[in-house]
Length: 425
Image 1 (cartoon, rainbow, N blue to C red):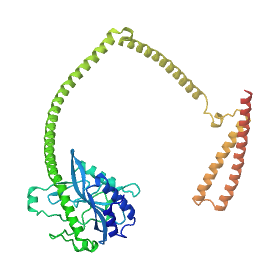
Image 2: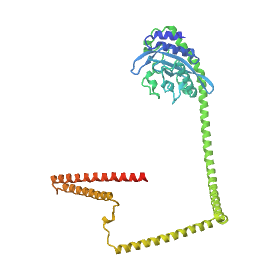
Image 3: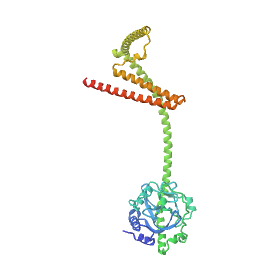
Image 4: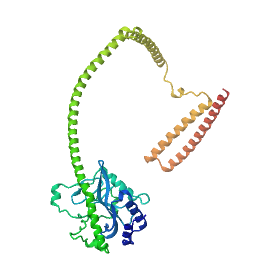
């Protein structure tokens, strides 16, 4: 069911949103939900990256967070850019004059802009305003974005109905994971008489005196709702400081105990290590002595006797091998002295005719290779004419081709004979 105030604001901002029905549906659902019951819609402005200003719908008020078991109201402004829901909403934390934004907060920038994973991963078809507020409330419950100002700052700063608020950046900046440094000065606050700045009046013309009174009452309501949060956050801040001091004291005590325990344990470890080493050494010596004296055939004497027998056997075998080697050497020397040097050709004796042919053809092939090598060398050294070289090479290669073909044929014949012998077994 659409909210009447949302419908009025969208009529005033006619033509601004690409999908006004989605804007109306999402904002109305949020206002009707429990998490958005303290929000109310207004017509406002948004500043683009190029410096242009365009109207927009903003939901002002508070959201509830549960901090350490207690519920607190955090004042926020939720801006809906003209391209919503393609772009996510822009959310600002708006602390009252007695509160300030926590420095170094992981999800809230120094200007109050909210950065959280839900907005960073915004998807138009699956994300909505209600889940946005639930995620924001959960994040603020783990780490409060505001705390009470010190008393000296509160007393030095005049308390007004509405603190000056920075102008919201462009909706494109919501996708950055880290808060950027504000590049624009804050938008002018309301004057003491309650009037808006000229820029705001340019886009919110037509507001009646009753609407301005409603806005003032809404601001008073926000201040009243955040008053409890102001004092509660002050208590939480003091509790955090006390907790930090307790943690520091506990850490120091733990470090002292750890150092003392480490020194004592080190001393005991050194003494125990020496004693254990002595005991292990004595135990090893006793076990060896027991094995040597008590175990009979499995003792050291039996092992040494067995090794002696093996060494004697190896020694006899070695003597026999030396005698055989000496006899062979003597026989070889006698043969060498009694016979002439054997020709190399006589050492290679073929077993059959085919083997003899293969031996001769292989020798001829190698001789042709040698001849070709020396022909190429003579040509390279310019000692042999090119024409004569080509004729000689052509003749030798032709002859070598015939030799290789003959060798191949003999090899095939021998392979066939070997296969036949193998088949007949």
